[in-house]
Image (cartoon, rainbow, N blue to C red):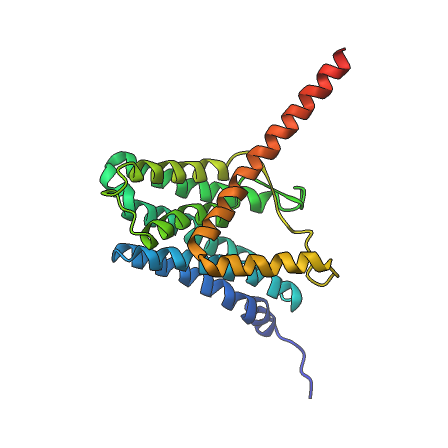
Length: 256
């Protein structure tokens, strides 16, 4: 016999969460936590790889939620907190433990600038979710910023590049960490790729390009991934420069 739903049953139902997408978010959070632990143990390659794995899992949780129609306000908040750990705290601490620790106060200050940049970036994204242009991100997305820092660590460890072989490496690390932190809170626009729909048909050449991309990544993952995210981080500045140039030309034409 169907019984009327009591207040207790309603409360339990309201407090329940969707399991599948939140499992991906939890896995991404674990990747960030694991990266911090490995950095503290001096295992920087494992730490960098863990951050990249968190990026993959972070990209899947939202898609899984949409495909299974399990989006929720809880999931959105949980995802944001996971991002702060995996792409805010973890890269800052990995960068600090790897190269910035030896720079004293300047080192931990730059690491903190990155962490607070990630926090502000995520807060702004959450508050502007309904009003911003879906085609673009305002400021560098935190996963891409994390990829800049983690990618630098990964390629250096992979190729045995240290401060002893490259004396400027601590300053290069500082520059990348500071650039990533500031760019996250800038007004520079970055293409979001949200218009890409995997269920739509694509030209044969596009499929071939995807296959070639997979082959390139598998040939040298740290170098290729780092190069891709460096290009993406610079693309926003290039597009901003082109827009400013176009506006200047339009203004000059109107005045003449």
